[in-house]
Amino acid sequence: MEHKGATSPSRMLLHPLGSASTARYLSCRSATAAQTGSLALLLAALSVQIGIGLAQAQEPESKRLMGIEAEGETEESGLEHPSEHLVVTDFPGELIDADLEAWQEHVPEVEEIEIDSSADDAEQPALFHAPDSDEERPLLLVLHSWSTDYRQNIDIPLAQFAVANDWVFMHPDFRGANDGRPESMASDPVISDMEDALEYAREHANVDESRIYLLGYSGGAMNSGGAMNALHLASRHPDTFAGVAAWVPVYDLVSWHEWNDERGEDYAEEIAGACGGVPEEGSEAHDECMQRSPRAHVPDAAGEIRVLIAHGIDDETVPVDQALHAYNDLVAEDARISREQIEAITAHGEIPEALLESSLHEQRDYPFFDEAEAPVLLHLQSGLAELALFDGEHDMLYRPGLEWLALQERD
View (cartoon, rainbow, N blue to C red):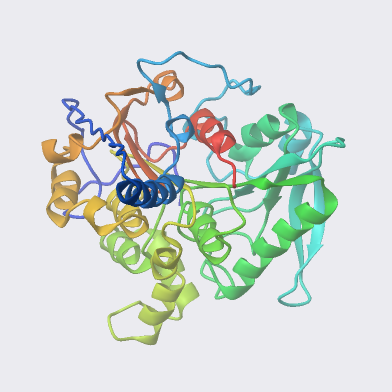
């Protein structure tokens, strides 16, 4: 289950981390172009420039990256963050608490609705808000985490943000908690329910189609709660989402099952129940588990979806290597984190110097991480993917993810 500050007694290779090194530096690259006078060279130069332009179109502008340039002028986003809470582990109660009365008290503008399922005769409950605006507004689709449902209380600050900034807000149920039922945990009905929720929001609100955002946390991140399902949905509809923020995600259900099974955690039984058995190599349950993992689908959408993956380096619930492998599948081969570097991070909780050389965190400031006392230790970016490792555990910071999403817009 998801617990605040949950820890595990042992650490193993490809599993949770310890404390991280804070020494780091960043190498900079620059490029120049030459112009010529002859017609032949001019045509060649134009060809090169066209190619460069196409390549740059695939790279986010600096202003769209997480954080702000350390040497640049700080520009206020103008976004309102009405909640006083900075991280989910500081929100009152337990992470899995789900109470409709709490929603009605703290964000009465959000209403409970039911959405007809296109997969079967079921009706999916959800929480929804459509601003009273003639202008098209961004849509924030938030997915609950592993052990709870659409009423998950820790997502209340996200709804408050949406209401305060006149965003459309959708918080669907997609078959509820991942409790071992075959229809849960990234099943076909789960994916269909998320698609139905997305279409409902588009049909019942004035949505800016260039600014549809997806956010998930924990046994949701990339696994079958919020974030995993976020990557599942985004990989199936890469042309829909302007940005996807996945916090402390599960990426590979087979390896996460093994990790939890070794520790006697209930997650292992829930995974086995949903997949039809223990996912041993060569079994049908293994194939089913792999099919339900984002790892089976995300690589096909690499370079097509703008994704931010953020993970606490001391996470003892979902090992940080899950985030590292997810990032690798989203970037070009020459930008991937090596196996040796992944092993060094997971085994020792230290970021190798060679990897720090590629990090952006010495050239950028991260005020929303700093105010939450969770400084960024590593920030990698390649193509449309970003990875942030921060000083923390199994947590999500509300403000930096929302600020990053607000910067993203589909062309």
